[in-house]
Amino acid sequence: MPPKACSPACANVSPVRPDAMDFVITTLLNALTLISILMLVGLGLAISFGLMNVTNLAHGEFVTVGAFAVYFVQSMGGSFWLGLAAAPIAGAVIGCILEFAIIRHLYSRPVSTVLATWGVSLILQQGLELIFGLGAKPVTPPIEGTLDLFFTVYPAYRLILIGIAMLTLLGVILLISRTSFGLDIRTVIQNREMAEGVGINTRRTYAIAFTFGAAIAGLAGGLVAPLAIVLPQMGVNYLANAFFVVIVGGVGSIGGLVAGSVFVGGLTSILNYQISPSLAQAVVLLAAIVAVRLRPNGLFNGASR
Amino acid sequence: MIARDRNWLLIFAACVALAIIYPFFVGGYQLTVIRDALIFGLFAASLDFFWGRTGILCFGHAAFFGIGGYIMALITLNDAISFASLLGIIGAVAGAALVSAIIGYFLFFGGIRGSYFTIVMLAMGVICQQAAVSWSSVTGGDSGLIGIPPIAFDVGGLHVDLSQDLPSYIFVSAIVAVTVLALWSISRGRWGTVLTAIQDNEVRAAALGHNAPLRLLVTFVLSAAIAGLAGALYVCMAGLVAPDLSGLLLSTEVIVWVAVGGRGTLLGPVLGAIFIQRAQQTISSFNPSLWPLLLGCVFVIIVFVLPDGILSIYARLKALFKGGRRAQ
Image (tube, rainbow over all chains, first blue to last red; front, side):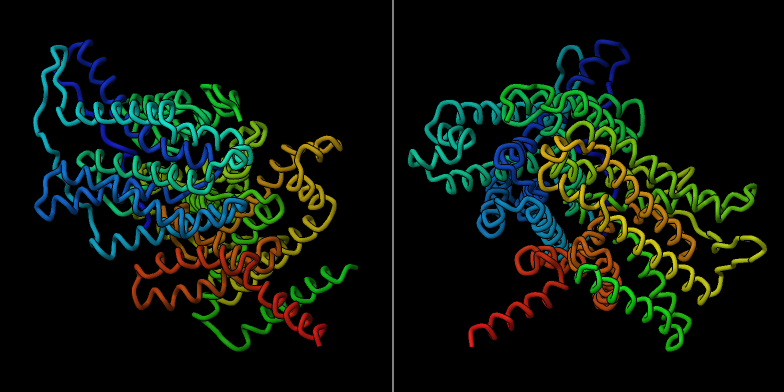
């Protein structure tokens, strides 16, 4: 019943050739895999926690739901890519329901939001366990095998994962900086009353932004499913790490998100070579606490609120 | 004396009286059940002391419970140590206090409040449980440590041996009663007033000369130390310690006990712990996976229906009838 200790996001790949260049490149790619996933999970949190001031403890379950969506589609005979398309939709549906039923009534009560979303998180975990049963669910990657990168050999699927994550991030940056909806979001974040004054429906903007964050987290869950242990309780590890990303990086900018992901993901990934994963987690936590003490507004202190 | 304080003392006296006459009606197993529930009640009161007065929710309080439990287990299981029970309790309290002091220093003086604090403590709970599982050479891994002896020590020629049901029940009830009373007198006095001021407006409280981070830190350390004490008592009574004791589920349950019993009342959380555990045992006997599901529903219900806990039903009914009378 309690979440078993499993690796935070995905295990490291060991270098194949025994030379230094190989080691460096493999380490970098391992870190990049973890950073990509944390960035996608953290994006939704940066929106809800950082910008809307909503502490959503059910955010990890969006990741879980995305991973289960891929498992479900695959077990029905569908391809991985179909599952990966279903993952963000599943995340968005759950996120939309959560926002509509619970979060929008609690914008002015932060502690209540914590309690209610934690309750939802427990309900979703047990619900998934009742539907799909106990035990880890197998998800097969779409591409087996490795790719020769001249310096090293690396699993092809992980490279695809990194690519999709980077494209998604680019898409989000463009959406926020170039579209009219992005302009609405930026306006609402800067000054909610003023945004309402110029005729922006702030409730709707919040709802869409929240759902959007949930969808991205669902996508992250779908992407990580072949690498991770797919369990109803898997979400909490992503939740804790993603919160660190947002806290360490500082809220309010994509740059902060990237800086936080690099800090948490890079440190975890490198430490995993030296010490056991749970000790690595503890060290990352301590480092994050110290970092927050030294730089209260985040490592990347762009737009402070 | 204010009416609210008098009411509290009356309820407290009633609870103590109930605890004194309880052993005359039941014995053996029933007594140990309520004894264990009381230990968790002490744990709930420790969380309430911090959460109720500062408004900051600690989502990993079971970490301190677990730290206390493991330190107690390691000290009492070591044959080379004499006065193991007393030393174990002191070590458990000191260990929990030390960890909370280190973490609290960085967080409170770093300006971390509210949700941020909640999240960091949530992560700390996760990590403590993982550490308990993976550091198996010391903690016994997943299965934990078994065979922890009951508390036994000599004080001034008086030999205290808590291997029997009744003495252990009396010992635990006395500790819980004294601790709750002490916490209450701290939180209703000047200390509690300043904490309320910090909760309402920290900048203003600081401008009046109160060292807000230090106050929060000391309150947090005290709260964690009592959680460690509860953990130490629990492992001696249960005879075993396992990673679940510092787990997320226990951290979650203690929040429910406090929230249902009524935040800020100190007594309510103890009662909440006793009643909810009784309910949990009944429900889990039907289906063990039903409990977390219900727990989740309880969270949502508390937030939307009973934000001030079960005790607020009485106040609401009173207000309702008062309102009705006035309308006539």
